[in-house]
Length: 219
Image (cartoon, rainbow, N blue to C red; front, side, top):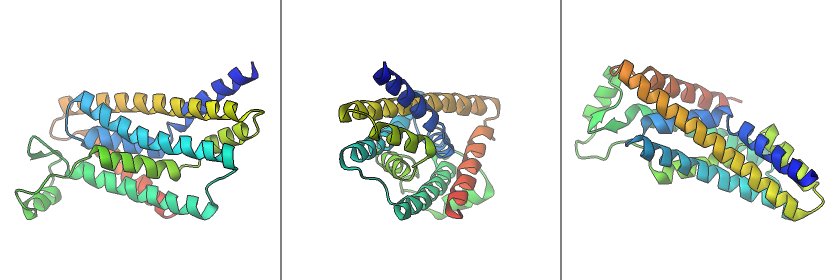
């Protein structure tokens, strides 16, 4: 019963950790600024989740097996890196294209597009860059929920029980990220149908990502 309770707690903490602001901002940017169908954007979101969850799993198992943790200075540095990635993603979201046209028309963006080479590749999200961003967010995301789980599993009677708990935590994260991605895709598409010339949810997501990124940098 104690083992089942540990697994249930781990899943719940994973679900909670998945709705942290930096995750919501990143997934909102990916689903709003990437090219492709709903299915393709969901797959791209899961690549971000894959990078994040892989790091969390490795970090959790390292704590269990080697009593290792991320140094305070490294966690602080990676927090700054998370901020930079959020700003980077908000810029990519603004400069993304669909069907050869700029996704968000404004004077500044139109001018930027004219200055660029006509045959240059458009700015967009790829599996590689979102997976990398997920890894950075995983390293720089030692939130209280994550630390609470790792402290719990580190004190578990059996190491294998702890590894199962870390796996359950990662699964909770994946579920949470998938739900956020689906909701975000739905809101973005609804916004485009209602106001195609001014997709409110996309601009809001971009602003949220940029402001959150700046807040990470000035902490």
